[in-house]
Picture 1 (cartoon, helix red, strand yellow):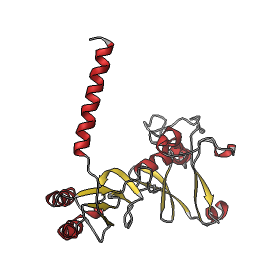
Picture 2 (spheres, one colour):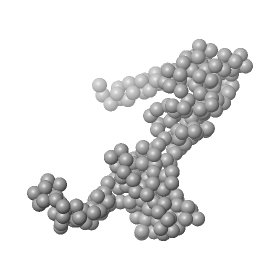
Picture 3 (cartoon, helix red, strand yellow):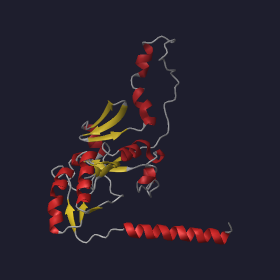
Picture 4 (cartoon, one colour):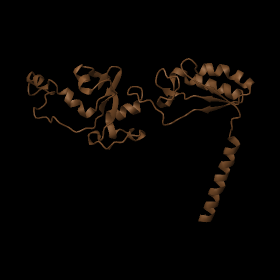
Length: 243
């Protein structure tokens, strides 16, 4: 097969695909917005489908229903694009809703904004990973972060506007609490839960190390040499006062 024949075959396949898509294309004639949240779930949506069909609605226009921040009433603060929002129901509930639409020959339009996500360090695993590993995070490129801003002191960092007062005052009042749970270190600031860069763990774990070493014999497996390096480079996020 020569180049001319190859191009001709490609054109034929492309045209066949276009024709097939045109046949499957659905243009909404009349839509009805369904604002899904914990008080109006997939089951509620399914229940009103027959009524909407009688009104002449051809397609329902659903608000975002991927997993969002708990309690979200709009659904735009998405935390995980890979699953449905559990507050709206189960996979079975969703499938039953879709089947009800199909049975009434109705379609569905989804309000979907890929770049809308919740900046929640607990519920959003991608964002938490970025806060923990910085530019090295596999999700770093998913967010519009300027890793090399004008201010050199912010190079390779994320500035978080979460403090309610100046950093020094917050620190003196003991409002920043270091915690250990689920096998990881985190910094708590009231309801905020922020991850600690693993490279910084030795700075915490070395606290009281000398006194502990004094109680252990030199042949103890957990004994650490006194000249163990005490500094290491890493990325980090930093605080910004909102006042």
